[in-house]
Length: 220
Image 1 (cartoon, helix red, strand yellow):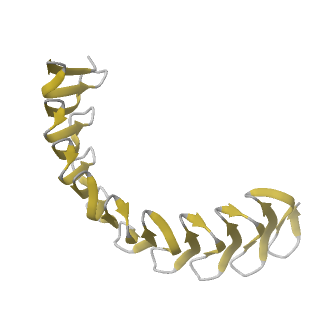
Image 2 (image 1 turned 180 degrees about the vertical axis):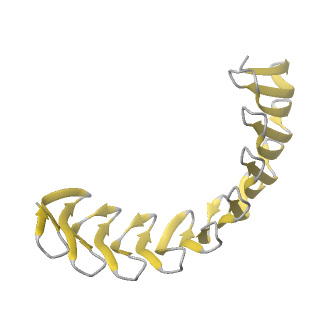
């Protein structure tokens, strides 16, 4: 059995249940005259709750909660008239915060922050109408910067720089509309060139060379 549901005059009425092929329950939801009403619950095949969401007149309303199979909360987000609104918080299975983001009318707006399980910031980026805009910065758990990249309408634009934890540059590459363009240069932590090559529309073109830290060519 995949699903069970009752109909009255061709309209779903009462509880509908979905099942895994094993026969374990997959979800359950209530209908009144073909319209979802009340709490819908999804389950892992183990029987643990995976997701809870509330419906009023077929629209998500109130807090939606997703769970790890262990029972720990994975994320929480609020809905008004089927649109995500306000702060969404995601969690590691340990209970530590994994990310924070803001929703306005189902679109990400404002700063989104990702965290290491230790609580240190992993990355920051700004959203406008669900598109990443401006500088995205990634961090090592120590707090040192791991990369910087500029985003315009969710696409990488301009110079992308990656860093060693010491602060030395690891590589530099240029992006145009989300595609690598021009020369990419990689560096040893000492500052010596490690490799370099050219890209056109995100494809390698021409000679690419790797170097030993001494400066001798490793291969072409």
